[in-house]
Length: 194
Image (cartoon, rainbow, N blue to C red; front, side, top):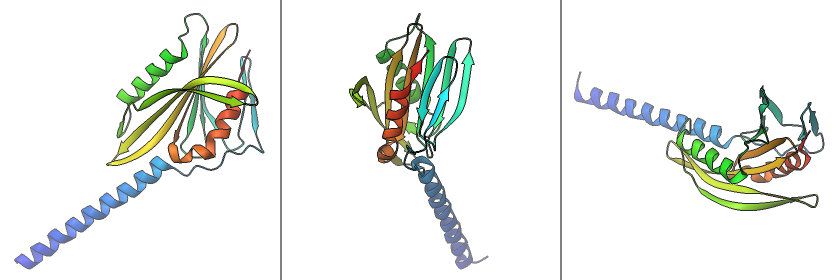
């Protein structure tokens, strides 16, 4: 084998490696960013169970609904990569929203399944929906995967009844917030604990 053939082989391997990296980068970028659609508020879906009810945009789905002896959680996925989580506990022994939020942020930061997630900034927020004020927290953070930084937002809210507490948390890629914000607000404002 001569030097020219060896050089061509090395260049081909480098080009394949660059192509592979570009392909992985492209796939991961679309996976991170997703293809979020506008929340469908014209065809809403009402969820009712023995202890909880709320309304969702028509193009969102409950993908997990687990009841472990009075402690319950539901995962709601949008049409893209945004997600809502409802954690419901008996009121006895429940934690303040700030403590719940801080524990969730720390857990997500320390145990992020892929890439890296920073803690980000946490601020108190008030959301007004149909004249009702909901106080909560907003967490702006960055997910880094293959060197690509993607800004995200998480929201945390709290509601309680005489016997139960619900923590509603939402997470979305920052650039998609306009597509899901009204859906988040719909779910938050319609949430009722029995």
